[in-house]
Amino acid sequence: MFVVIGILIGLGVGAALAFVALYALTGSRLAAARRTRQLLLTEARRDAEAMGREAQIEAREQSVKLRAEVEQEVSDRRAEIIKIEERVLAKEDEIDRKLTELTRREQGVSDRETHSKQLQDELKEVKDAELKELERVSGMTTNEAKAHLLNRSEELIRHELARRVRQMEEEAQTEAKRVAANHASETTVSLVELPSDDMKGRIIGREGRNIRTLEHLTGVDFIIDDTPQAVVLSSFDGIRREIAKVTLAKLIEDGRIHPARIEEMYYQSKAEIEEHIVHAGEQAVFEANCGPVHEELVKILGRLRFRTSYGQNVLKHTLEVVHLAGIMASELDASVKTARRAGLLHDLGKALTHEIEGSHAAISAQFARRYGESDAVVHAIEAHHYEVQPQTVEAVLLIAADAVSASRPGARGESLEHYIKRLEALEELAGHHSGVEKVYALQAGREIRVIVKPKEVDDDQAVLLSHEIAREIEDQLEYPGQIKVTVIRESRAVEVAKNATEAGAAAGDNGEPAPKQALGQRAK
Image 1: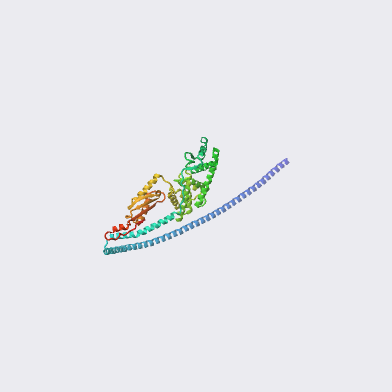
Image 2 (image 1 turned 135 degrees about the vertical axis):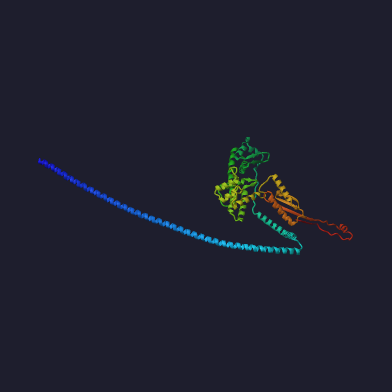
């Protein structure tokens, strides 16, 4: 019993001790946790306070920096305003000085005008007095003296004016010979000579198969008629007509004429003509002497060799425009290269007008721009027929050169009706002047000869009359090239030389012979 009670007491005491020990251990851990929490809170407060102080410091620094920047900007603005005020004050002072000077000058001008008016009045009085004295001394009125002086002055300057006119004509004729180009007049047909009329049948072929093949390949009409030993090729396309001509010439030389041979000769001739086109373009670029040109533009230039405009070969016209534009540009200190280059390319479109819609000037400008030509060259090209207004000297020079080349003598043809009307207009215009007896139009209207009455028109008046007629032709008529005006004044003195018998009879009673006078003639 006691043992059991002892065991129970021991168990109770052990449990109590264990509880105490466990309570002590738990309290120590809780205290440690509380201390750790306190420590962490303390460190967190310290860090927070440090971060707050740093933020305050940074905010103060930003505030100080911003204040300094604002103060600096305000200071700069104040300095700028002070400078502006100083300039305004200086301007006001200057304006005041100028107003003062202007007022002073206006006063001086007013005084001078008053003085000048007084002097003019005095001068007028003196001139009136001198005029009256001159009228009294000379015995002529003012109008009579003016008429006398004008007549005398006219006589004095007439010979000098005529001499200078002749000199200027000689200089102009010498200068006009500097540039000229031969222009081949072409039509829409070409003539191919045959060795014999038997060749016509071979060209036609059985049931016309040869001529149909030729016309189909070349696009040219082959006209075989009664013309002896000749075939006429008709086409508006000069290149096709030339290819057909060369093809037919090769066939005639070879002697074998059948569709297969015709096709072979056609392609050979086409290749030759294309080479000739390239060569013609390269030769034109070489003669133009304005720098390298794109190969595509060279080919188009070569095609102009087979294109005509109003009977004028376009490639030769182009080269003439190049030379004229270059000479005028050098005389005016303009860009010679731009003028020559624009002249070389200005009619490219004439080789393409049947392939591309638009005017030839617009097409030429389009291709020049496409192949890298400068804006100045392109503008001159598109303005050479006033489709756009010319804005550069080179553009105006190209317009002038193109007009000169197209209108010079022999450049272009004209219809018979227009030709007759032009001759009649020339004769009518020259015939209405006083003193004109007869007028003749010569050399297809390139010259008119005006015969005047010698008693009404003297030599000097004849010179001036030629210039008056020339100016009227320029102002009132449209004509290609130049028209030469020649005024002819002729006077004759005629006497008859008699033999001795007739002279004695004519002498009368005194027996003295009549004086002999040889035939005299003066013509100018």
